[in-house]
Image (cartoon, rainbow, N blue to C red; front, side, top):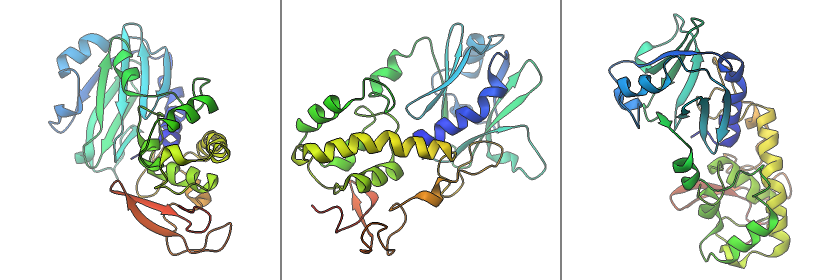
Length: 272
């Protein structure tokens, strides 16, 4: 599933196509009206037709498109992609929705597994209720991290994956920040030292920002737009590196399952 850097890379790619344009209509394709999560096709278009796009941004793993009367939100889920136009090499059976702009541009929503969804909210209170602070916002600070972790007896990895705790982190970047912080993924949150929490607090925005710089991580089919790839896979230290040597100590990286999620770590650097 695309995580914060991937979604931000999609936003960065499509902002020039969308900003200050007017929506003509949004259609579902291949009889897949289920792509519209909150409204029927007719009701959605009553809200967005003829509306000017004033802002394109990200909240957690959601792409947010602001119009004057609300917010059009897209969640890519596992295999969703946005694409400008359609060409002969595309399998059109994979398209689930189409955003038609008044300047005649067309933004396609391609989704092999068809889990991605489009929402419309009058305000973002529902979304904000589901999501914790953004890693780049002032509300995410060392005090928040230390205080919240001290109250939790659960393992650190699932805690960091909890979108109500921190918005945007997923499996790839949780493994990377825990390795950078020398924290075992199964360590109880309330047993982590202040020094390691400080490392964690510093590592999260640094690693996310670096990934955004390289347009995220393409593991299987992620594209920030128009079939380009995210290049951060070239800079991963532990994720997907099981059986290889740790960049810090040459110990063999292991893969285990934590809360049913494949988890990569160095047994020497990240002692339990």
